[in-house]
Length: 443
Image (cartoon, rainbow, N blue to C red; front, side, top):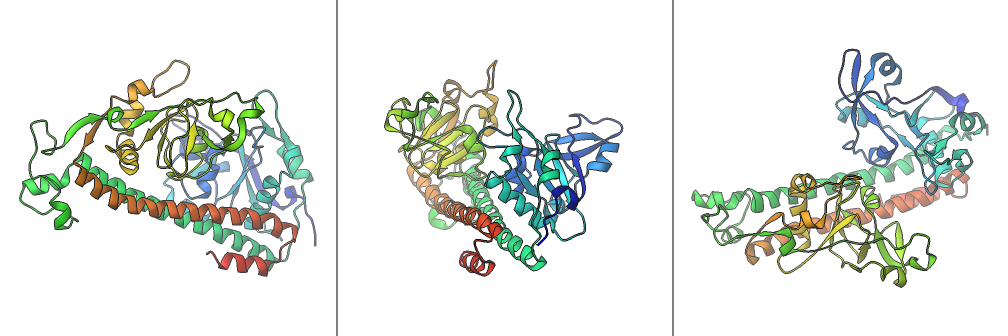
């Protein structure tokens, strides 16, 4: 087995480019992938990538290609060192409308012809990062943390396995990633279906309009259609419906952060969520949190534990992330938590937030940082339908959302298996045939 240096197996590598925010002559419109986008890019989600305008000369040299690897060189933290990477699959380029480059805090690696495949190199870099074997190249100054890439590339060797073994390892781990991505797409479709149903019933009032015209509501059985009135009241709402506010129909609470340097408050049995943790989910379901509280720590959060089913809305930067907690959870001060009541269920509250997100964000203010206060949030209007309509929606959308929760849970298990197999395969502790059996059982 040979061990070439990383620098020797690369055909081309360059730092990224940030460019300008507005178009001008000589600038090329490009999507710019930041380190903060890596986790979503890995799932095939390009929704957070900013569009920037890059000088043509730089764009010509720094346009990404399929099978390039992006490598983070700045911006990490003490607990999450720099050096993360992401592999750019060919299909990514088919789905994104503009040329792609990476931001200036990253660089791209392009593997040349030789004994190392790009896929295998990506997984080996993942192994080095997850096992903190490259932590020595992470430098945490008082400002932005940086990664000493030049030194790393000139010192780090990559073991050359037989081509078949490289392909087998990459294929196994990639299959788990692909299944996770398939689950994400299925979850997104189910969520979109439920969101469309909510908008049709509670925003556009489609069933009521149809019945007012003497027509059967589309995609609805007669029993469900009979739950809707065939006319509107003087306020423009369906007859028998009422206009309230979200603060009146849902229990809305905030949270707090116990002293971070007090050991007695932390690492206990109670989940504690932050907006940053919510922003990393990539799914509308929250199972676990990055940190936990002891009983003493929980006592410092006046709102206490919110029950399973609570809708969490991040109200401080990053603003606008929403999820339904699957377990009791306490939150920090960057949240508005909507607890279920007899006037609004969890799925209703979730889709109310999603349908009203523009209005919610329009109420954000603050001189130091943007925040949505509970004072500004609670008066936002909320349509309340009669209980039979709400129950029918809860049954339909709840079934879809339960499926979303199941897919998210399965993806979490697949990710855990992938992360367990990675170091064992790279170290040779686990034979490929044994790993194949484990993957075949779940994919």
